[in-house]
Image (cartoon, rainbow, N blue to C red; front, side, top):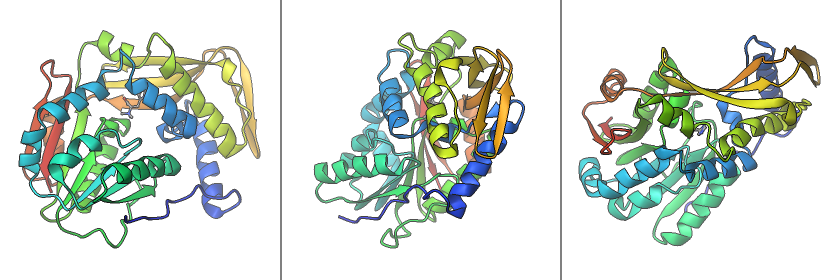
Length: 320
Ligand code: AVJ
């Protein structure tokens, strides 16, 4: 099987690690403070996200998987022959398993911010699909993705499921779509999943579940930041807040200080008033016609969409 050494976390003291710490500190110093959603995904965060995808309130994963199963034959027909399947934000590689039997690519590349986590999932995949060449790439997908040299330029399908594009603001999403079109290349394609606008109660329950798994996922970002930055966040002082922002058509997640508090890290500190928030995530919900326009604007040619009976989620195939 094709293997690539995953990008390992930058050792403390390297310029990259210092840059990352500076970036985290700068976002914490702003008002309102921010922590990028990419910092949810340490080992525990990946496990908590897996638990989220199985929650009764979190409809996106099961709705998208049902679409991939029920409309799989039509999707495969629309996509045509695939040599290399490149999944962005591959995580546990749960969804690509549903595509592999029909698409039969020669090679699978799983790209994820959590390099070790995706490496484990890709290794597992290689055992289940013996003929498949696999590799894992641990990187932030907003950075240009460097593929192993063995990945041929033709016959590429970029797979970006789960509505992860919702984490980026509309202009960031456009940049990412253009990058994905370049990655797919001439004759290639994009298969992308997007979560659609729906009743506020349904959306808000999905991001504030009764068991508190999403709350734990949100608070866990503070532990990850403590490790990266050397900060002293006390997780018990922070409360999970999630709501739908109608004007911007996005779920927002925040961490709210339960009391007045102070956070220190090497070279910096800041105080938070009781009730002050750190913005940790946006999850945009694009109406399908608007997202189809964005694909066209990003240079994709034709796009075909499949939705569930409730019109809660869409899987879209676009030609690069
Ligand atoms: C992985 C970004 C698609 O926005 O629904 C789940 C992350 N955050 N619950 C989403 C998430 C809170 C998820 N994405």
